[in-house]
Every structure is written in structure tokens, then in C-alpha cells.
Length: 280
Image (tube, rainbow, N blue to C red; front, side):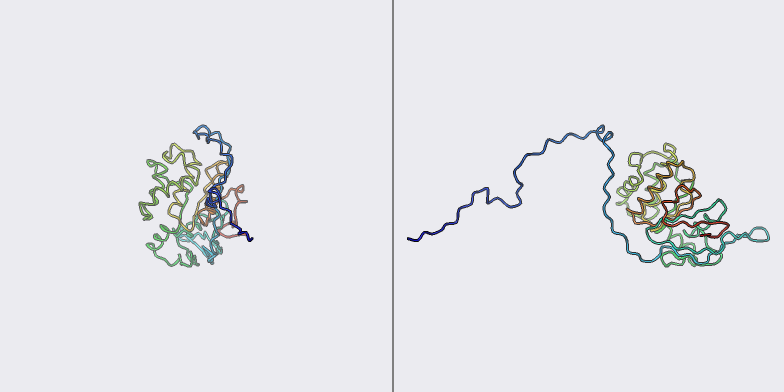
């Protein structure tokens, strides 16, 4: 006599969806997070998202045989004497030199604030040396950020309002202001000081507000004139750390002037200026 094999009936547990959580010990109840626990918690480096490097679309800046002279009396002062340089995307480039060497004059021309007496300056293939004042102003407003040695903050406005003002001037939609201002101030480490006015902030904090203001409109190029000159070595190191973080997270290129030898090691390239010429 033949016996039919019957498939065993599965229990209800077996019919449960395969993605149902497995049984096991439950987690311990979560402890409430308080301001005190956050303040005294060990400092763990924040995980940074992996940001793909931008495609190298060629140099951000190209400078070819730039000269700059200023008329004085019946003669001329030759400040720049044949400058050639190149700045590539994502670099931190420093112009090193003593006061009077011509580095600030060069930085002003890289940002379109001044024009060379002769030579060429190309920003993303745009000839800065040929653009008129209106076109250079528009380019600066949208694609270049400036950080000045004297901070250039409005004293009656808070850190938040100073950064927001740069977005207003750049024509950024109002719907983006809150998120962008918060992001920039947190990026420079001022998340808890964003509603303080400049006179309530230290020199290093004011410089970081100036950095947040300069990057708020997402420029491709950031130009900084002696950003650590008025800071002690510790504050200067913090500013340079902020710069490296900006390059990584915001995909910007930075060119700055300095005469401080202690910060040169973080640069991707250093151009040393003596009497209006590069010597390396």
C-alpha cells in the first residue's frame, strides 16, 4: 500500500515575513540627554561625509607676465614685475612676503579690485584684465569671496545678520537664508555665538564670522589678506583649520597672503614674493 508524503504545515511563526525582527534581548532603556551630559561628554570627531573630488576642469586662476606700476610725482613705482602663477581647484595657495613686497596688490588684482598695467589674469577662462568695472563687480558678487585683515564686519549687526547681509547682496533667495547662515556659522565653530555682535566676540571669533560671511554665497574662489596677522598662534591655527575644512566640505579654492612662517606647512603651494617678484 502506497503512502502519500504530505508536506508539513508551517506554523504561524514560520509564515512570518523574512524581514521581521529576530527575537532577542531588548535594548536597555535610553538615558535622557541633558545639557550637562552633552557638555561633559568626550569630544568625538564628527564623521564627515565622503564628498567626491570635483573634476579638474583646469586652473581656477592663471596669471601671465603681470606688471603693475603706480604714478608718483613725475615717475612711476613698479610694484609687480612679471608675475606668473597658477591656482588649481581645491588648493590652498599662499603668497608669502614682507610688507611692501607686492602680495596685497597682486591679491587685489586676482579678485578684480584692480587691473594690471600689463599682462593677463584669467579666472575660469574669463579675462579679468579685459572686463569693465560692472562686469568685474558682478563676477566678484557671484563667484569670489573676500576676507580682509580688519574683518570688515558691521558693528551694529550680529554675526547672523552680518552673514545674512552677504546673501542679500548676492541675490540669494530668502528661502535659503536661514539654512545657509546656520550652516556657515556652524562650519566655522560659532553655532553658539551666532547672535552676538562683533564687540562681544574675540578677535579670532570675529575673523571666523568674516570667513562665514565670505563663503555664504558659495564662491568658487576665496581670497584672504593676512587673515591671521592680528591673531595669536593658537587662534591662527584655528583659522587655518577652518580653511582646510572649507576646502573639503564646500569645494572651494583659497588664495591668501601671509608673512607668518608658522602656517606655511598647511599650504598646497607657497609663492614667495620679494620686491614684486616670485623667487621660487
